Picture 1 (cartoon, rainbow, N blue to C red):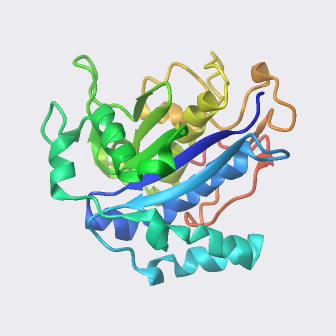
Picture 2: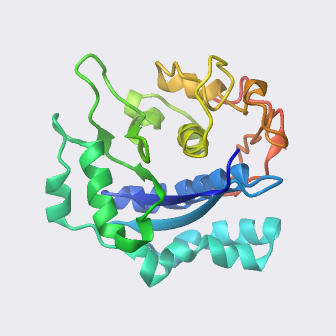
Picture 3: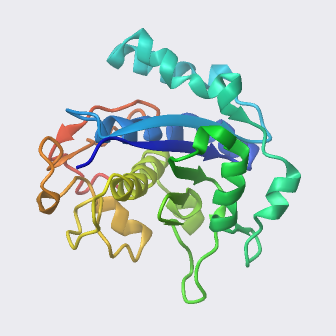
Length: 261
């Protein structure tokens, strides 16, 4: 693997409910993506930004701060809350939302969103790959019902919408954990490509190429041996059904089967 690449992680939430309900969980997932690819040695540099018309309430991150503090110490706790710093918090305007409208009602155009996001980030995004996580549906091809993620050579957009069991009118007692695992898995796949890994045919690997259903993400739990990355092969995250907002440690061969229902 070559020298570390720069990755900007941008959380764009259009709905107030998403900021309140999903914000801490998605932020933890982005921190875990960084933790994974820098496990053992640095493979990428990460910077996180947040954009919404709605303000994040510091109290919403209280439990996340406590959990991260217990696991990693106060320095990382402060780092986890950098989305609240002025230079990394961006207000997404109604005009910007109109510019990224998708082909179908209620969708956004992921490619336009990436372009507008680079304008929003300005110099911070120059020369870096861009990973966007958003709560809006992204525009699928004509023969698809939905897409979890899509992108280009140096950007990717992941939608939380189809990862949510309520999108499918399903009851899930661990709803936030399910969303977190699916979003994190999709992000790990895209960032893997940013750092130079190829997609593969291993259905248990983060880089699996044939993700034909959102439930396929449920069993993609580790980096497969075909990628031959010392220190990362077989690594992933154990599901924590009790705390979706916790920033988890990288573990070897996590058990996923039967935990996502």
